[in-house]
Amino acid sequence: MTDHLPAALARQVGERNEIAIRSASPGDAAAIRRLAHLVDRTVPANPVLVAESDGAIVAALSTSSNEIVTDPFQATGDLVALLELRSAQLHALAA
Image 1 (cartoon, one colour):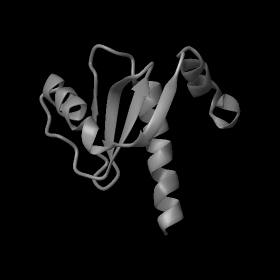
Image 2 (cartoon, helix red, strand yellow):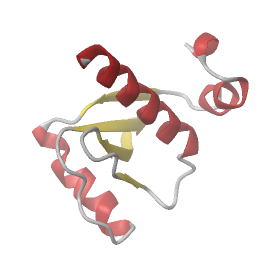
Image 3 (cartoon, rainbow, N blue to C red):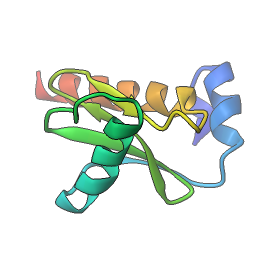
Image 4 (cartoon, rainbow, N blue to C red):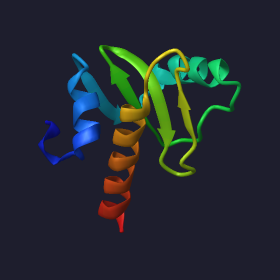
């Protein structure tokens, strides 16, 4: 999985047991609201991508506004980079 990532990002990603980058579903709303509340920000506008680490949503990115909310108690820099990469891929496919 890490073969196509920059070396520093690949090292960080490789330290996690399980990562999922996916489109948010209606069932994710409470988790995204919790993240926004933790960092005293508004909930990102839809559509949203979420990053899960070991089964927990720890970051969310709006693909329309690029707003990001993350769990301040978790190291999420690598996951934010993956969210941004996936968002760019989706924008390129739509162009």
